[in-house]
Length: 184
Image 1: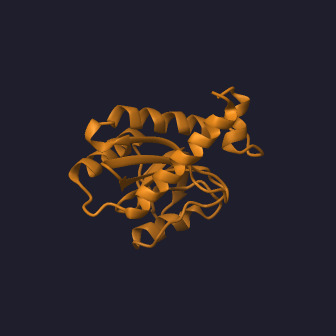
Image 2 (image 1 turned 120 degrees about the vertical axis):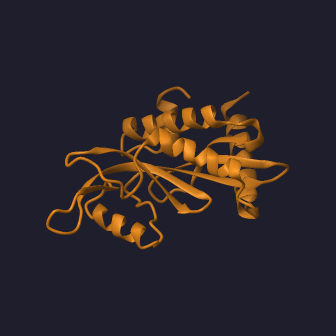
């Protein structure tokens, strides 16, 4: 198959996935919640969790009940004289993300941080999707599976691989350019 045909199939797959997500999930099933919680446990730190003073790493949070975000974070001093350090977004004003999230405001991933989003959609079956977000480009579909097939391990592996891309990808390259340089 030529690169052109492979790219056309990839674009069609993304289009179908976006349509399924747009239709949404009428009932956020326990399987969906369990799938997201298993990824959250593997990440280990949620936005606003207490962390050591010099901590840097991966954080996750729910943007909406059915949208789960994974991105880089770091420690910020909490409020008060003896405020503990908490995990916020790895940007200069990332401490504000902690306050916004605790107040139940929408915390949109900033353009300067590549991030991952997990969400669900319904076509012929309930499906889970993993999307890569970078800068102002549209989300790029990097993984999808039927929820009924119990994709816990595959989703966790896809998240881990995408996190490696985020760490290794040069800022001046887009994800497709970076993957092409790796021969993928």
